[in-house]
Length: 134
Image (cartoon, rainbow, N blue to C red; front, side, top):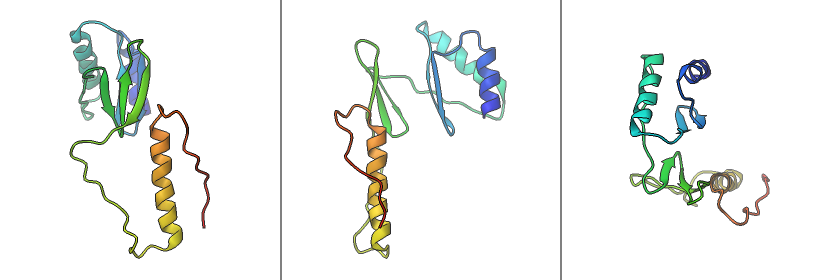
């Protein structure tokens, strides 16, 4: 994927302002312009490698979901994030009567807490957690 990115981004007429990738998801910000520029950028990506297909979501009310976060653009153009849950998400919980030992249960809870803390950048205070294991 890195070779594809290098080729595609170096050959596009107007490079994106931001291009961030996590596995097979990209977060891209293009410079302001007509909607046709966005479609042309997507078309350019598709011509680079026929076996890779891109889909696109555009912002709605200055927000756009990306992975498990909601990216929010404020009136000054700054980006912040908050936790995002897809409408189709089915949450599962770790039951206390599972066959996991106490150490695994604690690590599962701490892992979830670290994930939430890491994904929410707009918190005033970071969660006061320290890594530890039993």
